[in-house]
Structure formats: structure tokens, C-alpha cells
Length: 204
Image (cartoon, rainbow, N blue to C red; front, side, top):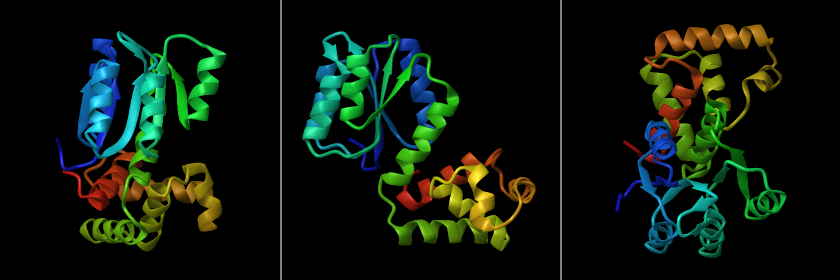
């Protein structure tokens, strides 16, 4: 068992499972299982989870069973249910268990938003997050405005809402993001946020 918080992925479709594993492994360690039984074993083993992604239809049952057990065991981590079909009862059940409901194949923007939400909620306290932002800002010599943009993004503020928070124009936000990306090895703001959050969580 990893000492670091993991994404638990419960998916029996090999292609989808491998895609999810490759994507989420960029953010945190991944534990991949393909059955309800193995998922319940992971949960009962008191694993430390960043977030959980579950297929609804599994060989030995439903991902909703796994999610219900997860919540019963006291886990409050973000969860995403995946399905190839639209079913009102399942959607309502997923929402009642505090999970997103996403149709296959999931879009990258859905996975990106879920990963950011999960990392933001998985453990770093305010002090830990502030420290990680400060360390990244010092390492890459970010300006005050650049640092504030990273802090807002790490807190889950969407880019289009940043101008109001910062009292600057949207164009200024875009220009500042381009400038800070030139100072870092990251291709986009999401990657900078991932760097900050993984540092705050002590992930590799």
C-alpha cells in the first residue's frame, strides 16, 4: 500500500482503465482495480485516497455499491461515476452519494477539473498550500500578480473569474499567465497548479 494519497480507479474496460491511469498518474499515485470485490478490499484496507473514479457497470456488481460503501466508511473524497448509458435513477443515486456523473468517454476537461478539485481537497491545509505557493514563487521568481494567479487557480477559481478577484482586465490575466509560464517548465496553468498541490501534499 502506498503511503501517499492515491486515486482509486474502478474500471473493467482495459482501454478506458489504461487511459484513466495514464491521466491521473500525472497528478498522484493510482490504484487500479476492475471489480467491486477488489474495490471494497482497497476501501476496507483504509487506503488514503485523493479521489475515486468508478464505472457503474462492473463484472460483479455496480460502482454505485462501491461508492455507497466508500461513503459509509466515512470517506468524503471527490468521486466521479462513469457510464456509457444515461439512467435517471443512477444519476440521482450518484448525486445523492455526492459524485459527479460523466458519460464515456470522459472529456479531458472533465478529468482535468476533477483532478484539480480532488487534489485541492485531499489534504493540504491553508498553511501547507501557502507554503507550497511561496516555494514555487521563489523557485521561479514569480511576480506578486503571477503568484496571486497561481494561488487563485490552486484554490479552484476559474480563469474567467480571476479578473474580478484581482481587479484587473481579463487581458491582463491572460498576459500574466503567459509571462509566468515562460518562467516555469510547465506548459499551462493547470500544470503549475499540479506542481503546487503535489508539493503541498508531499506527493512525488
